[in-house]
Amino acid sequence: NMVLIDLQRTWEWEIDEENMFVTLGAGVRFGHHCQGCLEHGLWFINTGGGSASCVIANTLNYGCSPLNYRMGNAERRALSMEWVTPEGDIVYSGSWTQGEDGFGGDGPGPNLMGALRGMNTWFGAMGIVTRMTVKAFSVIENATEVIVPEGITPDTSLAFKDTGRIRWINFQFPSNDSMEKCMAEVGHAQIGA
Image (cartoon, rainbow, N blue to C red; front, side):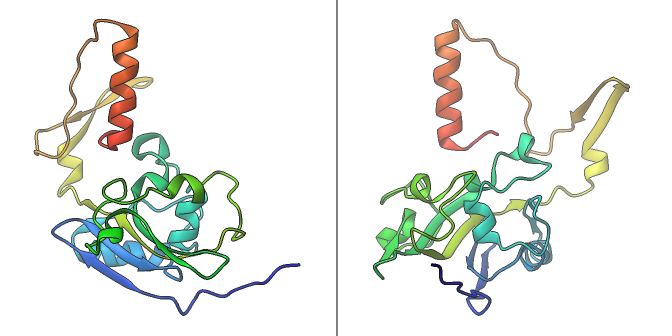
């Protein structure tokens, strides 16, 4: 037995340009989301589900994209959530637990993303996420001038001109253990893919 719930009327979309995040409802699809971000000089990675897939559902369900190898999975860009449990309780995560804007996912309050996301999620058996904030990114103006291909196929790479947004830093660790610890901390802080 199952109940199908149409979330199309839960359409909410509000952007915070300064802090680069978007608050959206469960009915918002990637096509509208990406268009809205671009109209405000920001962008968002569309998933492999395409412009017709819903942002929240796809974010919770792994969010595969051709760009995942560069930007990480979609759930890494989720910040705060409003979750209605099967019992009808409303639970908030991230900075929404403190009555703040939805700027932080791992900040104050519980991080419930681990219970709600996954490659083969729970398909609504744990309730419905009705609202979420997601990260947006600044658009790189004149990208073809900033990101320059170098080399001859198959030995090619991209050279990044200094824009203050992209940095490529090579460094060496004293041991494998220190490297693993650093990689785990960078991943946890979500400052690198």
